[in-house]
Length: 181
Image (tube, rainbow, N blue to C red; front, side, top):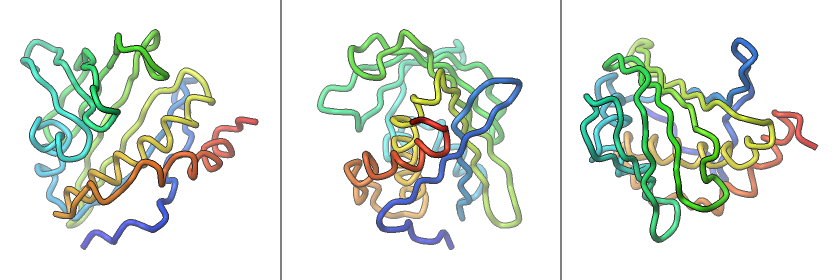
């Protein structure tokens, strides 16, 4: 059984570097079967429960993705699918033309990797960062969304978590983890 989420929320992201590339990394262990977790990160209806939804034809290599919990009128982003190995790996690039703090002059590069460990599915998530300072916003944000996913996969209400409990509360963890003064 998936353990309940800690209250208050706990920062779970960590700093890693691969080939000189700075990343924010998470690891979550879920009771759900591998194919179910794959659906949670690829199926529009399942994604809508915890982060957002996409439209378009993924066979084209790109879709439009809208994060549903980013304010009242979220704008879609074009997402390019760089790698898709069903039930194992999804790597994408996203850019948004929307104004705001995370508007994209920069692309967001992130990947979901899934593995079976005994009866559990392990989800490893990485987000490439353009600077250590970016972790101060993305870190608490991904903790929030991954907690929402964990709740949705456990059959719980992902709406029971509030972003205000994550940011700014978790920022100090990411400041220390990424060496930001």
